[in-house]
Image (tube, rainbow, N blue to C red):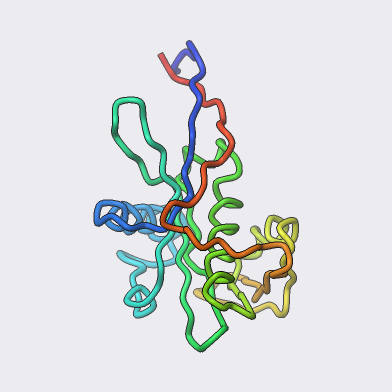
Length: 181
């Protein structure tokens, strides 16, 4: 068992994924969460939506200059003004940092809002409904998707002011993460 020797501050930037390496890291993270961890997909969760979706990443910039994508969500617009968020995933080890999922949701809805969104929806796994409700979403209906209970949920856009610079995004307030010896 590792011995905790210190705590370091971890800053997480939530931003549109604009670099090739960020997009590749997002694909790996989605496979880790939706294929390996949850078993929803067998080998890959890529679908046709990926061709038009805007990927969003939660990125940790380490002191040594390395970068790690620890969360993701994608947004897309199937018709004018109607946007969807999907494939929200946070790396297992980053879930203890807190606010990563909430930050991804905030940038997703606020970016869509800046692009003329009048309705923002997502199919949310049942265990995540309380998080979305705390973030000013409401459930429209329940359904089974990939053998799991989901809620079709809608964001209250009044709580998500438009963010026009999603490529820059924002930094979540610094968290402390234990370093193992």
